Length: 404
Ligand code: PLP
Image (cartoon, rainbow, N blue to C red; front, side, top):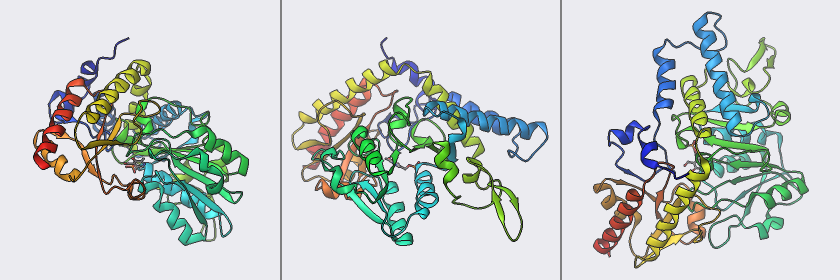
């Protein structure tokens, strides 16, 4: 089947109203379809209630909607049981949760390994763990195209390694990590594997366990859901072994001044009132995403990505940073222009109504490794059209001519 982005765009008020313009900053945040807005609005307008504690119908309905959303997110990530999903405020919060709940069981002599390709959200929590617990932090180098290098696993992931935390897909280069050898190395040394799926999750349903992951984190606002929500997937046995991170209401079974019995997971990790409306919206986004024809959407995105890769190659002084081939990548294309700062390019493009991102993309160590200060990044989604990528390439060419 041919993918028809124009039909998809009709489901997104931001495109129907024209407010989003040429929107190529989907790696930062995606737009929201009506079905997600309806789910959030339905909860808020229909009379909202806090979940779990109330015994009146509105509260029972809210609890049911929240748990249905958990189940939908679970289905999207291939969870065996909805209780494997913990709602958080985003991917950053999910990684911090693991860095505390799992990380605080580690100490001197233990190691955590991350890669050079990580977003700051998957670097800083582990540095903070190193400060707190004296845990060693090892870095898996990337290859010349910015992909975690499977040939250098042995030095970075030693017998002391307890957790490997790597991105499933880079927000700078669009490179999809070759997870299988990393998962195999994790099993070999007895380490757990966390995959940062913030970018990948907008590109179709997946099976986190089949990938070899023990933890998988996602971000609502990067997968057509609301801001302020995300999720952590982990197997029941792992969640059951982990102590809580945040303490408060809802994560307890019983509290006295002497002692607290914690609730079982996932509630153990959801202290306080969770982002109920946002979680319901994320559940609606996951359900909508599961209904899409991913073969057709994937072919569409790959075709547009190829057009971008070829278009940039034809521009003088511009080069693609990251994989040049159109395999094992998503439509996140970073571009460096010799002698021109990406912020100047983004500014000119912005004046033409084209939204792209410039800068270090919260991945300063990767930029340093690639010898760059900043790139201009165009990032696609299933609603991106040919005319958007064409407008981008045109404007980029003009911007380079103006700025050089
Ligand atoms: N990981 C990656 C690869 C990202 O691109 C981002 C956001 O840009 C994050 C983590 C952080 O996600 P969140 O905004 O949900 O905290």
